[in-house]
Image: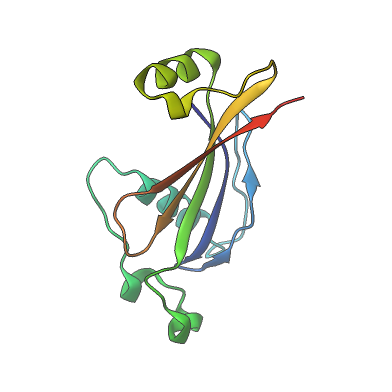
Length: 129
């Protein structure tokens, strides 16, 4: 499973990162206090080793406090699975089986709302051709 892209919204000083496409290497460049660490912290909170729930009071952007909402999606991610991983998932449950035909890939989009400590997963199969 490989992280293909992500988006961070309303986390610390990041209002909206937009979709960030990932390759083999990612370099975050910016001035001090521009949000580099906030983006990494939001991604870490998406799936931490020890549970670290979001804190509306501490992690919502300061200038937007009146817009606070526990329903806000903070992190959206998109993962791509290789053929071996797809086969393993399909053996667990038929809903994970790829669509018939060649050139299909399984993409899983996961979203992490503030009110939940666990990501919400949505899976779709798209054609790569």
